[in-house]
Length: 340
Ligand code: SF4
Image (cartoon, rainbow, N blue to C red; front, side):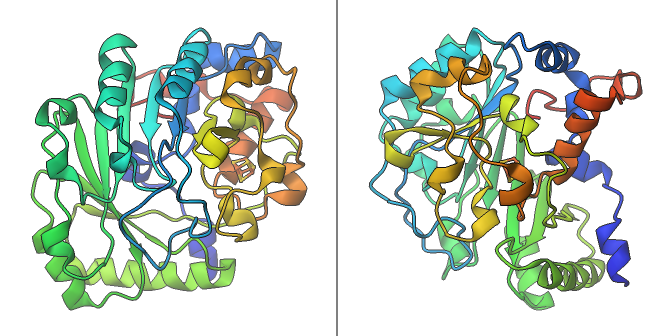
């Protein structure tokens, strides 16, 4: 397989369905128009990492140098969400930081988001605390993605919750053998709709391309239809402004709550923590950001070499500056389209 085939890979249906490939933006005309007209109603979804602590130590963790004592007060999260709701927020993805199910108000937070705020709620978890969360809470999620970390005795430690939404899994390729992958395939229950596999995004571009080739070969041999390869590569954004930040900001646990433009910007400098230069504002100030009273302080073109959303930035930049749009191509409702 040639490098160009990896670089020019055309996204598969599963990638579009279960990851953020950008096409879901075309289902949000109002928000895109608001961005162009600067009326401050751009937000569609938000990621929130409430908790810095984690019970695992994965070698490919992208935020190993974070302060694991950081967490966000529940009232701070509620205030942030209520503010975003006045601007159209539809969905919340609870993620890490640390392991979100360790957050002491986890159940209360999920119930409040779903039942009181009527939001779609999703979770990214390492699956090791599933039994500690009440079944009634698990049923509230639109989707849950369990990270299949190859820790010792993972088969005994990782559990899959019973949810009514879409249950998925994700794993990082760290050189697993075909036999290990067969074991994993047997371990993952049938109700898990997909298993995403991707290389360790902390690696450089050349290594990522090589890893993608190995993953492709591995999956061909494995022949389990639930697996799909996400062709994540680093790409410099074409724009100085990270347009995507206005549609899906990220509330991190850093310093008890700090808003960043995305949840993967640690890939830019490989510092294993969220760099202060990217910070947008405190959660209480989020409306000032959406109203463009607080500008983005960094130049994405210069500082975001590791961006895995470069295609999304280009799509939004082309829409903003050149009026290039594809609304008509995506008239049908998509699965979980509120999770852009
Ligand atoms: S890494 Fe990409 S998505 Fe994240 S802030 Fe930079 S340009 Fe935006």
